[in-house]
Image (tube, rainbow, N blue to C red; front, side, top):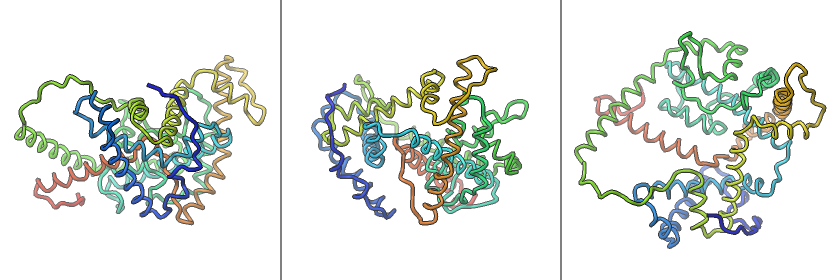
Length: 394
């Protein structure tokens, strides 16, 4: 249920960037304390208690925990949502943001190649104990401390990749949605990689890293054995401790979808800044929905109308396909041009020891960290049950 939205001046926002500690340790302490504060406020709120009465007790704690994560994420990324609310994001800034995503895809490919070597037992990293750690760092790629610096050669390679593409139906070519090893390495009956990102194949063919794909996976099967042992143990424990069943719950469960947290905020939130940031979140979600229908003509035509140079259509294509192709290639050109300043910023940040501001707007990093911790504990427990040392040397 939407309520009337009011104007909010963020000049007095209590969590402005200049009020947040820059030191990494102090930064983490600050947001950990803020999360505790938010959780306490929710626990003591009569509005929250009244709202939750309508729902099953089954997942209330998880819902509240996730809502706290959302609030913290909104605070961390408040500049982004303010930008959406005031529609300040320029076209050039958009291409710069897309170029940052392309730069992240270079890092993701480098990380994937390192995972191939790690699984084969060729290299080790202090930050990696289990294979899921690579998925965590894939999600948090700009903060990954052990990936070698991107080179000028790799930037040139990404540019040539972008400019070589002419299929507008492939979506954003630099977008790497998952780095799940089993998914990426899955082959067809003819031996071709079904889900290997096009960028990964392009990189390997030019950088000569194809042979890494042939390395054996020594870690994965062992981990699966340990996780299966942990699952079996959990089943036994659940069977032994099985309690008297509770009467059927008639109230609905709280939904984990985005709109549920937004509705919860509308009904219970008292902080006008947070409410306004949730307005920005709604705009962000609508943008995602509209962009998912990227084969409509409105977007490509708008791209061409705002082009900073003449763009010509392919006369060999039917008109609507020619428009899609022209817009797609123009956007790739703009992203390629924006890569140089984005790379310069990346180099500067690395040399000065700066960290990138997190853009984890849905707290996916937090979710991945939670899974990472659970898997690590499960593997250690299984090794102990198996009479093996409680460590990750397997």
